[in-house]
Length: 385
Image 1: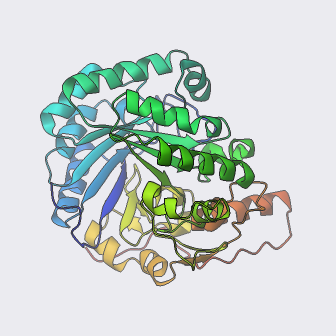
Image 2 (image 1 turned 180 degrees about the vertical axis):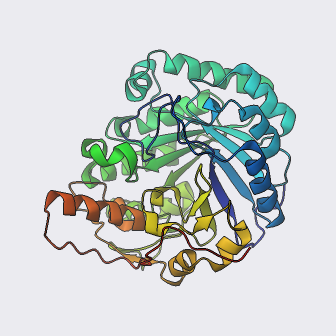
């Protein structure tokens, strides 16, 4: 694997190989389709070409995501192609259709890690969130298989109103199950999440939980487990973390626990959006966006890998250039946000979704959000090859 410290342009990519999924999680930001639905998806040969281009560009991290990647009948071929390059590679799965033979292929072809979506440390919590009986049983069986094959595995947990009270227990579960890392993901808008406001914790609830978790990790560390937080905007110094810790007198633990240096300039309503700067998201049909959360915003499409090279899109797309020129988002995220996640108001895609919902709720009323966004009239930009 190449050095992850290399200072290259396109650092990481989310490769969405399908929008189909066998589950219907009501907090999911992906507009998923049924498993049997006909969808426009990149072929295996097209995926091989995309991966080869990313390798030539020096991309450091490629994550295969969905939907549920393992509903594709050619997933074993995708795994073989993914493991044949120098970048760090992983696949995100809900584990319900994952089979032992798939993990054998993962080990044989050199895919670096499997990431599991986990919504609870018990069957009751996880199965209720996934809407599928015995989902937890299937998950733990596949995790056990990873341990037996010595496959690196990571845990991804969405921070919902249901998981928020159990953050400490989820950390302990991850450690006991041999996960190398646990990422808590604050919800983004899009897909089913746009119709599930009660799944988004309030800032008051989040603040109490993150202070409690920080104290727990500071006094009872889990040495073999790396715990991190992922915010929709990916600001290097998230005010949603710094402000509650500072108020609780725990600012020094922002660095010691979360490995994030405090920033005196961190403030509400002015976050840094990293979309399109060193990362992109490729959709199942080949469309390219600055991040996954932009997929339902047609004017944010930067190009399509079927028509342009990834290098050309990344270096010359007016959409991505505009995102880089104006990385600061003057948003509406604040501690008083009530309807949606305080964090979505710090994110360009979240602001656009919130704007659309406000217009639907109040037809004819002008709604203004302050976020520097390119205004393009065509869905994609035709770039030279």
